[in-house]
Length: 276
Image 1 (cartoon, rainbow, N blue to C red):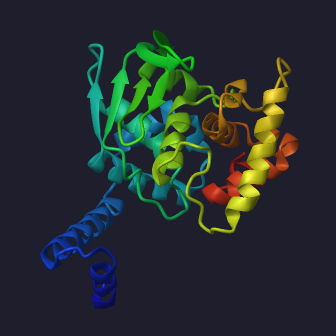
Image 2: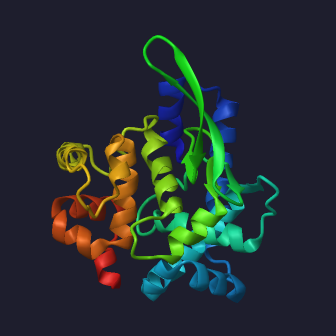
């Protein structure tokens, strides 16, 4: 941030000079730290973990593997993991989750899931308390979860679902990709299936294509689909399950949903078809 940037900052926000300088130093320090992390050697033990637990990694070209290693270093340095339900956090858990989450950040400008600080991991599917409203009375219940993503809060994952989803690379189900795509969606403050796009003009096409595909999925009923029917729940869930299929079933998605595939390819700056 140069002098001109600081002047704009003071004018626009009225932030006191000392506070603005502190923010500038903090951001500079973070950039320097991230640069060092990107250049840090990636341990062979971690590579073994990823190769065994994340088959999608084995499809990546060497250039993307190298970039992913740097993203994983940053992810693990900036996010904390906490075990729940008696689960002890190991390098296998941390690296397996970080590798999949970081795939969503490849090849593009990123804020590194800036609102996320903590990942909670249960050993198995877990039961969460839910509260719904019928318009008059609030109804409290309990539901079984594989994972969840809280806006301005943690990502919660079930370890058995993480390993089961990632090892079956062709089923279009991956709870880590799903929950972390929610994090991307929520970065603008709303969970609405529209993450922050590179160009403002892109929102028109995004809304049309994803809106049409969402409505089509809602009407399919029990018919077999490339995209999980859970995506018909709401637009946010549609974006999440579409992301799963984009990475795990690119050939089928490109064939049956070419416009949707192209929108996701433009957003993620990746083409998983090239990795097959």
